[in-house]
Image (cartoon, rainbow, N blue to C red; front, side, top):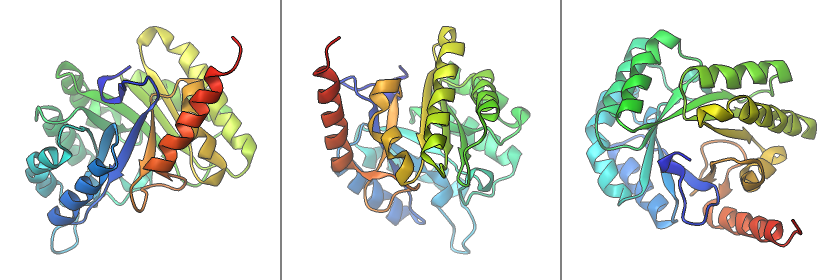
Length: 259
């Protein structure tokens, strides 16, 4: 288990995404998130913009110490979600890699999100630096409009592992309940295929059909789940207190079953 997702209960960590277009909005959102009691915060750097409305990666780096102060000891995952992965971010590949390298050497964060849609040469140095610094690498691949085929999912998980990710995160949009089982089956194959690499597999099916993947991750080895405080960052995220209650009820049901 990577440190950012370790919990005292052994249940998957509850991570709250935080977005803010200004410094003030960001700090206020983090304060609200911390009050909800998450295990970690995902700070979405792509949401910060300058007065002209352009994405402000440099301003986000300047804001990082204040973000950590506001997090009040809660672990922080730093994410810049690009347009290719369903977010608003528009950094070039070189600027994206530079951002990840700076975050990894800051000594302030616990993990970085590294998108599979970015070319290997753009992120390779950042991954090496992060791992040497003890910063977890959450390799991610997002598909907001569909669920890839079984063969595609196997390739995606393998590619994330091949990039030396500590966590293989794949988020898909199901259009039928069979799409959810397709993702979970691929996640299980990835667990078996990469069990010698000490990686965690984090499958998320978005929307109402995929809620089970957010609640029942304990049963299939997921290290974390993403919950909402206010408006969520992706379809299907559950408010934190309700999410914890449902996860606890699921855990109790598992414990009541004969071995």
